[in-house]
Amino acid sequence: MAEQEQEQGQGQGQGHGHDDEHVRVAVIGSGFGGLGAAVRLRREGITDFVVLERAGSVGGTWRDNSYPGCACDVPSHLYSFSFAPNPEWPRTFSGQEHIRAYLEHVTDVFHLRPHIRFDSEVKKMTWDAAKLRWDIETTAGSLSADVVVSATGPLSDPKIPDIPGLDTFPGKVFHSARWDHDYDLAGKRVAMIGTGASAIQIVPSVQPEVARLTLFQRTPAWVMPRVDREISGLERSLHRALPVTSRLRRGLLWGIRELQVQAFTKRPDELGFVERLAKRNMARAVKDPALRAKLTPDYRIGCKRILLSSTYYPALAQDNVDVVAAGLSEVRGSTVVAADGTEAEVDAIVFGTGFHVTDMPIAERVVGADGRTLAESWKGGMEALRGASAAGFPNWMTIIGPNTGLGNSSMILMIESQLNYMADYLRQLDVLGGRAALDARPSAVKAWNRKVQDRMKRTVWNTGGCTSWYLDAAGRNTTIWPGTTTEFRRATRRVELAEYEVLRAPAHKGAAERTESTGTERPERAEAVDA
Image 1 (cartoon, rainbow, N blue to C red):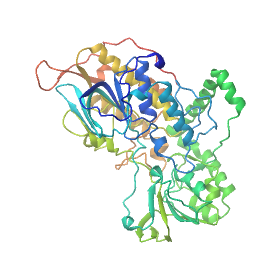
Image 2: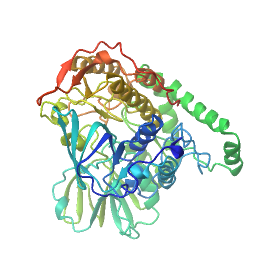
Image 3: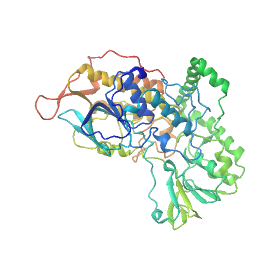
Image 4: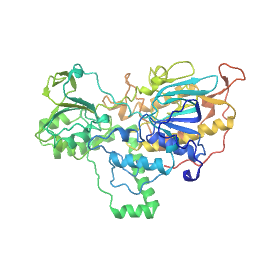
């Protein structure tokens, strides 16, 4: 167990400089993906690694998103690591503060802090072909690593649209993921831009205290009731005394969602029944037919993420709320102007406009074997072998990479599958021996991506008639996995060496040598972590 392993790098976890340091593995980010990678590395017996974190604490998106009402829309017992069950979840759907506390707990239980370099934002990662390593520049110094595991996550860099006149607005402006807790919204006139997962939590949380709330809705969302409740003391006691009950609860939540996948991926027409339930949910709270018309989507439910809230519609029906069925197009002084010409005087503008998902900024900072950045390589769309490895970027892996997102279940399941793949990747390098690296073959990446995109064609995300953040600028779905979590677990259980080129460091200085991989050499496999 982690408690019994010898600590390495003691005392370096608080952002100390790391010039000239070399490690076997550098993990980027300390959200669920980064912390999960760190735990898995320790469980594999690897302690020569660091976790580079740009902020001063762990938590990732659950640290950054602290807006009023912030909570998860996946049940608590499913939105946690299988190897770190939490019998103390206070509610069936956890709030941000509970999830962040859970991640802090995982960090301590598995003794991860000595490995974490806080306040160390990665500025550039460059592949050194002669030394078969990554040279990493951070705000706290430089280091190198044999392998990089990028776990920056797709929901880490806020996106604020380029609105004419926004820079001249005299009031307060901030994004939901950068909430200004020093600014009091009480009695203010507030413009809320967007109707995504953050906005439907913010609106009912701030509506009772603001003077007026104007919601700019470019596209209405499908909203289902959020059946949340307090988990009783008896339930928590049972989960503590009999951990199998917690596993059974998790298994049931997982199984229900696995059964739902067919409707999203193969038979979108079956979702009509769910649409009727969503409309009934709206009708109970919104009596005004004109407002209901504004709030009713014209696309198939599931095309965008189905949102969960029992308070959003009631808040919109209040007298101090205006719903503008158009996006924000211009700011004139303290006046915000919608695309349909609607105007409103406001004191504050809150953007709930999402993140850079298909154009992740980290891709600009990764320089591969041919001198191109990952962003340049992905100019035609993100793609990675089994959601992890990009061609031309040896010994570089990403957690929550292209086409690993989910539309109806817990991303922790996908993360743990990718951790299985990461662990086997490192075992393969051990078996190869010496100075070696693996570079995904372009043909293997193309074949994997072609199969994924072929399956994507009939999914609700592609056929549902909406424009969503799942799609890139060219209209390709490069974010969602078009299958079950079980299928993805099988696909990432082991590394197929035939899908990679093996790079060897030459005896003389110069570029690394490429050798053909037969895929026949296999390491002894450790037990995979079960979901």
